[in-house]
Picture 1 (cartoon, rainbow, N blue to C red):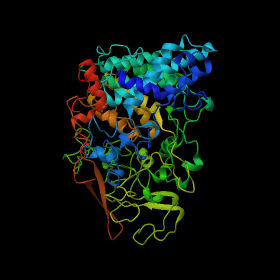
Picture 2 (cartoon, rainbow, N blue to C red):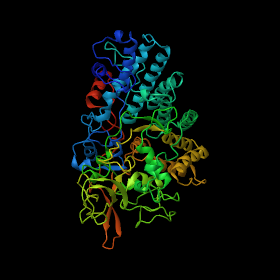
Picture 3 (cartoon, rainbow, N blue to C red):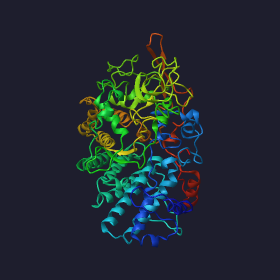
Picture 4 (tube, helix red, strand yellow):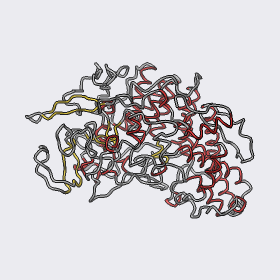
Length: 632
């Protein structure tokens, strides 16, 4: 609920919003009364569309084609931080954020990624209004009435979950509508756990509605919510509630374990399963895909999954994706891949910290998980003494197959349209004309096209380029857009369960779950003798790799923190691999910080996003309480 000067003003704008894709064709036009809307079957369905319009696209669709939270944790560096320092990542890295002007809340971005406080409360208001009116509304088909009501409950749960992720427990619970004439002085902030219970209640309404399906099976209904999403939201939010940042000193892990166990069982029973085979071998197992050494099938499976959208079918190829965004990610080869390919920008550059997280193929971590680095700037790696495969002078050999599916590194290859002719300085690739060809991705100092550079927009900042979401051969002559963003997938739910089970002491079940993920990836099972503490560390490490660059790390680092902590060990300094090409064609690898000064979005207050200043002031004025998050 928002206090009346803002919340109800937002309602006035919702009727002009575009309708949800393929649900119904007509949306209210702003000239109808509520009585008129809910007296007409088609208009009732159209009003439900207004509950859908604020679901964000995510992925690359943050401001200026950024990946937002992926770039604000230790996973990646955004090349726009130098080229366009006034926008989101540059401001975050420089600590240029306040309650009155914050890069996350102050920008209404492409695809609904931004201005979350206003957008989500507007959607929650509409969902609640719909829930309260639908029983008495004119609806021709009773099955439609039941399904639409369930959708509104589930959509409200989704928006509340998003508010909790960004703002924490700085919000009230709105079960019923507030009117202009109501007394708002008694409105109170709810506890994090109480809000999660409210979210789960809404999800349970959806799960208890027979007319709501477990997945969407026809393109005409693409984008509609379903029971699979309800289980995914429950899984995630009870995990967040049990985590140190949010649990208020309570031990909620047993409940998190039980909820996750049931959600996972229900998803499996209703047809959800991991994406476990290559369905397009002509593309992903081709020599020209360059997916891992010797056309590794596990690498190909992983890359294929993230570069293909989910189809709406009764027998879908992709049974892992639970809910995907309504739009694709655009032509990401020139905004979020290898910038030189089309001459624009590289966008998200994976950090050395992320590269360090990928184990060697024998299942051994590269670094000591208790203390990965011996210094605060991450320039001195603390190697895992048990790892005998890793060679710092040949750092990309013998790695987890997901590494090769996710990251372009020095010496990797890509066949695509390259919009430039090679110069003699590009030793590995010269001579070669503009055109579709195979190119060695050389990221060393001085390489004029794909080498590391501190300011050039199309260069890499870190010695790496993102590959995970990039089709193996997309380009100007093969314009395959980035797939629809996978907002929830079964792989995440399995890891949610593994973490909750381990924290609750169910070590055998936890290990079995995480090993299912590792088997799909082509990695060995975890050692059977791990203690509870060591198993939890390995599960966290597995989340980092399996869910890399999917927006989870930003929130995981926060929820694993205590309310008094900061993010100095992970987000303050991020590093690059500074590579020198020697005269004999070998390379010297040396770590360095991406820039000489620290990133400043690591302090305690950055655990949460602030409530917009005007809103916080109104809340204080009306309720007499301070609603603002600590430090803002």
